[in-house]
Image (cartoon, rainbow, N blue to C red; front, side, top):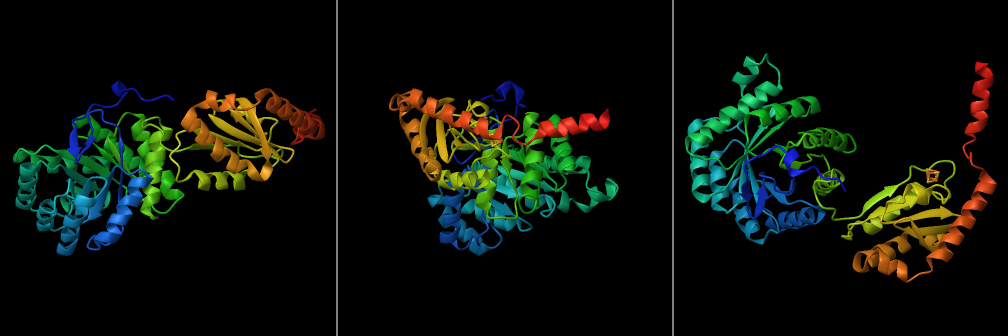
Length: 408
Ligand code: SF4
């Protein structure tokens, strides 16, 4: 898989969120946020474990009252991943979260506005070696900045807000800083991060804020975060979806894997879009396969193809695939036919073979079967289908003749 070379990523300073490095060429990390009440530490811990399982490297919890800070003190020692406390308005809760042992704070400069409060938090965090994310949000810019920038959220206003804030922290020799400049508009957020990356080397936390429910929220987040990552900008990411946060962690992880920025952890399921030639309900079989592979950490590319006529050829680069033909599934490994299974056993066969290849390797798995026999059977079904359906199953040739006649 192609991976953006380290040299192509903007170089940033590195800091540690607990034991997870952020910036400075470290693997890009996935973040998410719990939606339980933090004071309910058992429910919050359960969600943190679910998020970690889904691919989150770092999890944020709100610290909105003293009970939440007490919850954090119970959560932090038992969490499988570092914990960030989200602070709005009350700087004293930032101090309480530090006391609870959190690994990072997130402050919104739009709503902690007294410089002496910001400095008090920065001094305490500096003494404890705890980093802080300066989280500028388009929706909560300082009123003076709105006015200065024409009463609108602009990339320039967001960058100015972040730089103003950095100064408060640097004044007390605090530089364990990450920055985000999130907006709900993808073009504004992309431009804000791009401008910010030109003027600072602090690590950047990417996100489209209030992206909304899937699928639009997924699309907006992927467009914004993906565009920046492709330019080498960004050190840690969060999808902000109106959905179960597990979806956020999965999406973040999937984006990084798709862009070759993190090692594949789970199955990469590819499937043909189906067409008039399909021998099975490709959508339903792919959904069954997604469910079957969901909890299995098998880092293989698995293909589901609707017909044996084109499927094996088009998915020849997959580690493992299956193509339907004549109520049978033709299973192939690295483009080589391996087995023929009943149509209703296709998904089970894929799981079984994926586990075999993962544990023993493709060659060892292929050595167990008669690949020549499987290839002969696949070719026979392919020829049968071609004889029945012809090369032009969608009857495009007839339409092309008609077009030519109309055009003549
Ligand atoms: S030709 Fe076969 S593999 Fe290609 S889209 Fe149609 S059913 Fe799927």
